[in-house]
Image (tube, rainbow, N blue to C red; front, top):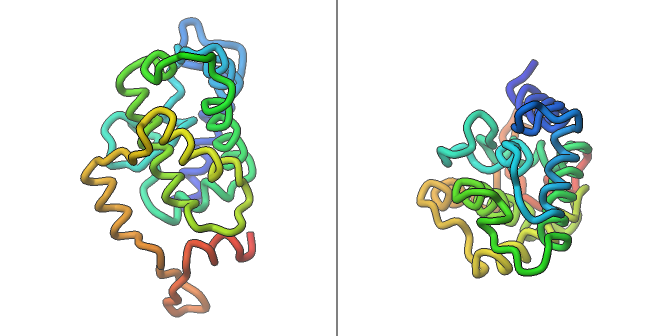
Length: 191
């Protein structure tokens, strides 16, 4: 199994698992627990890292992280993972109880950092894409940044460096040669 497939499988397995990080383990899938907790306005389970993926540069996301631009694109294009990401972000934006502050919502300072890093990543990845398989993620990231983070990205130096290195043009292997590809072309190309 290729590294990218392993990464996708790891996230899928975590999202489908029966444990939400509570003791005893919940009988519900982690995704369902995460959605319920966000609707109630308080994260209690240990699901933030695998439901709200961010770059590996952050020390609070443990084994669940995105390591490269290609992994981010694969994650977003995956039917289950892209849909779940868009859905949980939409719930965070639209269905959390009125007046709940972000630290209460995310359950800890680390949870706040995870959300901030997550929406920063997906706002960057989807920015400028005319078409993508899961538009919910794109449409809500900037709004979450505005609602909870004054419209600013997470500002971590390693995050800024990673995004600068990725730039708007990437190099991919195509027919045995390197070919530049824009973010837009990645999403508008064949799935």
